[in-house]
Amino acid sequence: LMSAYQLRYLDKIPNHAVVNEAVELAKARKKGSEKMVNAVLRRILREGWPDIATIKRKNKRDSIAYSLPVWLVSKLKEEYGEERAQAIFESLLVRNKASIRVTDLSRKEEIKAVLEASDSPLAVSGLVKE
Image (cartoon, rainbow, N blue to C red; front, side):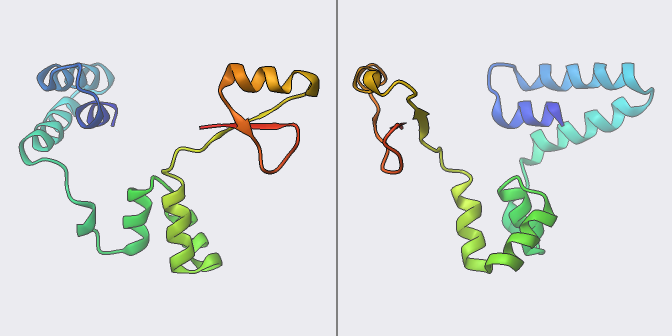
């Protein structure tokens, strides 16, 4: 799994080095497993990654697309309905703002300027930064 992640998302290490290292780790861990590791990684390199859209079960597809366990996907859909649950899943992939609570309000403007933050719409003692 670590090597598959490296192949998919990291580009500093050449593919052949990733496969070789995975094979060596598999060999050290369990004799004979290196063949399977080599075959799986080489197949990924040869054929590319499967398309998520080909997964027939909707909950499984959403689970993989949004990196959530299937049980949580099912529960959110059951609780909020398909449309609202989908909006929740998509919101998980959006980078949130950082919220800062200022304990010494006399220094709030100074901290706001240094951090280049803006006032929180929710709390007087809060600042928000993108």
